[in-house]
Length: 215
Image 1 (cartoon, rainbow, N blue to C red):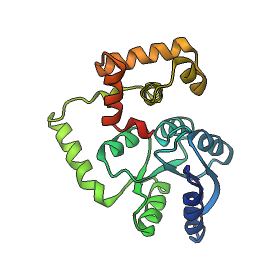
Image 2 (cartoon, rainbow, N blue to C red):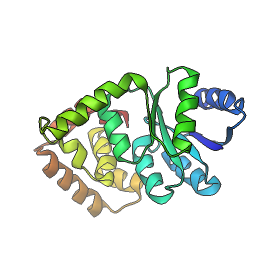
Image 3 (spheres, helix red, strand yellow):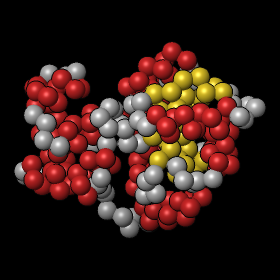
Image 4 (tube, helix red, strand yellow):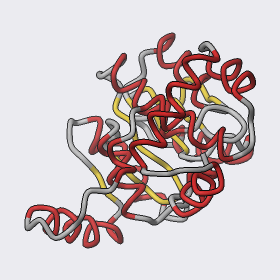
């Protein structure tokens, strides 16, 4: 099967490419440094599996790219490769279209199993996170968990939020996302409304709490 690796650290890309190419049924056909490059390479190579890091500053994050790639190239299965052992991240990336979630410090065999599982149409979750995910789903089914605004933001609002929190102006955000200043202002107003926030300091506090500044 053909694989693309997306990670902002060259040494990480090289390391994973090395161990994967030693597998008889795996071949790394390209590597990317951020989500935008990953999107372009998936469009070019149409790989079976994409290994996607979640946090790739200053380029587009894996979370944003996952949703775009899943929507435009559904035949490519996405495995999130990250240091975040947080069920909130897990739930959100699964919602965005990822089929697998593996921690970077997991044994090599876990990574191989994840890749083979998603390539065959299954879903793979890091074993240490399975229990927390099941508990989260059970709580939701029982109506014990309140709706989290984090889960109702649009993909574009998720792109705008960390840029606002990091102090970028409307024009800078517009240039980064290739949209108009008016569109940026509209997204800012909408996400503030959805999150019930009244000021930028409140938004920064929310971004820190939800780890958006890692995106």
